[in-house]
Structure formats: C-alpha cells, structure tokens
Length: 197
Image (cartoon, rainbow, N blue to C red):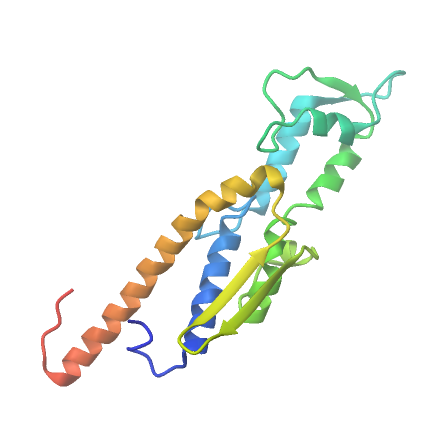
C-alpha cells in the first residue's frame, strides 16, 4: 500500500522504513528502553547501583582485587547483580566503575552500521564503540529484502531483544498506516471523492 501511494522506488521506500526500524531497535536496546529518548544516564546509574551493592571500597590487607571475576559470578540471567549477595571488601572500585561506564552503549552500537548505511544518526556514546553488525539489501524479480543484524547483543539479553521485535514492527506499521492514510486523504481531496478510514 505504501509503495502504491508513493512516487519513490521500492528500494528507496524500503531503506527509508529500514532506517526507522533500526532507529527504533537502537532505542530499545539496553540501556535504552523507549522509542522517545536515549538512556545513557540510566546505564551509568545501573552500574553505580550494582557495584555499590556488591563492593565496599577498602585498602585493608586481604581486600579483593579481582573485581571483574567477582562481579561476573554475582550477576543473574539479565546481567544485574543478584539480590542477597554478600558485599565484598575490594580495592579499585572507582577505577573498575569507570571501565564499565566506558562500555555503556556497546550493545546498542551493533546497530551502528545499519543506521549509518540507511542515514540514521545514533548518539556519540553509542557510535564510539565498534560493535559488530551489518545491513544487506537483496532485490529479486518480485520483491526487495532489507536485512539488518546486531551481532553484539549479549547472549543473556538476546531473548529480551527478540521479544521486543514484534513491538518494534507494530510501532512501525502504525506509523506507516498513518502515512498511507495521509496520502489517501490527500488524493481523495484532489479527486473529489470522500475518504474514510
């Protein structure tokens, strides 16, 4: 329907919609969680809160220094520090927190190649990462296919992202129908016929 109401080519329309889909996908890839805004601050706050729950800064003899190993072992299925874990005395907590904060946006950056190719613009805190991902357009005699892949989604979060895909597609379909209705209403005004949704 969108193709029939537009003067643009199938490839142009597919790439236009693909750009919007990949931007929607980036908007709900952690730490982001809304189509309307980015959430770097939320990612940083999550790191701060988790580490505060797990570690207590200490320079005493016997304080732990393998923070990454302890942190990894204390995380649950969704990557957060599990409730009820014992707090550990450790040295170098601030430095470790900065290391983790520098990784914020890495998973969402798997959409960077697709967004760049299709004309979308992601925030710098996401594009600073070189995360794997790709976009591919295939044209057959009867249809065009646009494939976009984020290969940096952590295994523990893959199910979460996959569950969001129908939500993304419904959101995009709603926007497309709004556009189609706009074109049909415009055409009906020119032709003199009444258009009803």
